[in-house]
Image (tube, rainbow over all chains, first blue to last red; front, top):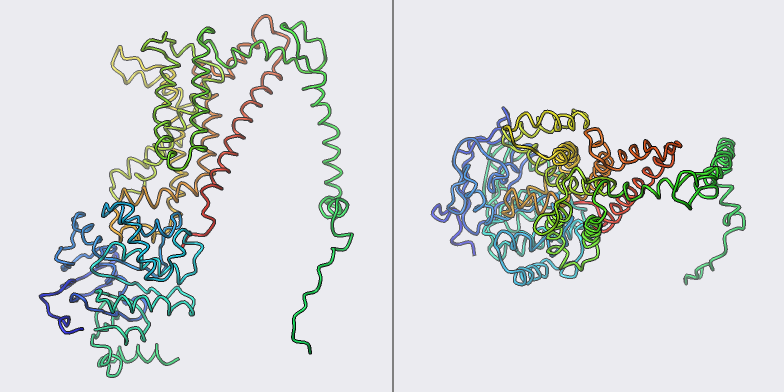
Amino acid sequence: MSTQTKSSTIDSIVKMEKLNKWYGTFHVLKDIDFDVAKGEKIVVCGPSGSGKSTLIRCINRLEEYQEGSLTVDGVALNEDIKNIEAVRREVGMVFQHFNLFPHLTILENLTLAPLWVRKIPKKEAEATAMEYLERVKIPEQALKFPGQLSGGQQQRVAIARSLCMNPKIMLFDEPTSALDPEMISEVLDVMVELAEEGMTMICVTHEMGFAKKVADRVIFMDAGQIVEQNNPQEFFDNPQNERTQLFLSQIIDH
Amino acid sequence: MDNTFTPIEARKPPSGAIGPIAWMKASLFSSPVNTILTVFFAYIIIRFVPPIIDWAFISANWVGTTQEECTKSGACWIFIKQWFSQLLYGSYPESLHWRVNLALIGLVAVVVLQFFLPQHLRRRVGWVSLLVYPLISLWLMYGGFGLETVSTDKWGGFSLNILLAFAGILMSLPIGIVWALGRQSEMPFVRVVCISSIELFRGVPLITILFMGSVMLPLFFPAGVQLDKLMRAFIAITLFQSAYMAEVIRGGLQAIPKGQVEAANSLGLGYWKTMRLIVLPQALKISIPNIVNTFIALFKDTTLVLIIGLFEVLSTIQAALQNSNWLGGHHIEGYVFVAFVFWVFCYTMSRISVHIEKKLDTGHSRS
């Protein structure tokens, strides 16, 4: 199924060119060139502070950048708030700490954006929301509040909430890092299913099993740069860069 | 070993562990210090409470119309009774008291509506009533459009405190919200204006603001333009308490994790929708105790308008005490009565706040 995906630049849905970002005087992203093809699944890994979260947060403009250019789904991401909101409508994001809205029920969490951003009628939005809750296997929790759910359930709700906006790209920012170990697989299962349906996904994660299973490409970042990228097979079995080898030995050797 | 589980039958607790005697032992006499405190407070209660009850009720004078009929040693409640109408309505013409009553009943109705309407009506009817009621009550109080006009210098008594407080509360919450959001704005100009104005109003005593409003404000208006004295007091109190409200709400805003805004943004919600749907509902909820605290402060501050010559309830008491028929020194009765009335209202507000908090509690920590 990955015949048309591989790095055909015409199909790029995300296109970063010479992207640079600073926090104050700290240079977090350095000359990043990064293309994502439609339907491609990318796993980004690297040590903490390497800029991987910042990189994907640039794609829906939760972070701004200072130099270079970034085009998402044909829209240039710049200061223009209209463009930013247009991009955000098409890009879903799942956070490490779920960030569900605690004052709203699960169903309301899911229908909020379709109602207020897409202006979809309530009935329809609720029907869609229930469909996605079925898909993440917790329709019976629809009327509860987020605080009543386990971490794994909350994260699945968060995924469903993004999907309700019918996004073209899904960003995952360490979606399993805050979960108890026994809940990680239920979230990963949902992500694998989503990948199989052909969603364009960019995941910051250290779940190497997941990377091997679904990624078209694994990217290793350190010190604000893309150090190495390759298909998972090559990346794990035959890492080229010394830094990558060190990192992989550290995360696998215990 | 038998592998079936047989639960042990539940037994009664030992007799020393429950019952009033056990409770007293545990709560009142658990240690020497606790025993001394218990005895001390028992003494205070026995020494002071009966005389107060005696003064306020048993030996009090309830029946009659003049000071001379206060023959018993207790409180002279006749004083309050005779001045009651003044204390409630001030100099509002007696034949038009029904208009004040109607305005006050309307106020109670509007507040009650917010709680007892069915959910789907509460949003619409509740909010509309909050917006329409002030106009209707203003019309009832002031007149015009077919009603006889009663100028604001005739308004007075406790009804003035209540209406001033309610108007202040209605205005200070939205102003406080806007001010608090402005204070956090990313636009430096908006931020600086908001911070400096909040600090100005918060850093000056209310009495000073009232005097400024009453004496200095007219100097800035062109000759001939007169702003009503009550209006000036209202603006002064509202701005003063709005500044406090802004700080209270800022506290609430800062308690909302950044992830909430990020999640809302990532779903495509813009600034205003994020604030309205995500941030403010949570921030206001956790600020309720402090918001109501500010409301209560505002309500009590309405007595300060007496210093610029408005006849609210305290100044009415003072006037009554100087009346030649009532020179027997009824200060205590007067002030106890005012204190009691304020306490009842403030306590009610605090109960309502507890009720709202319970109602809005989704019972669980934020994610």
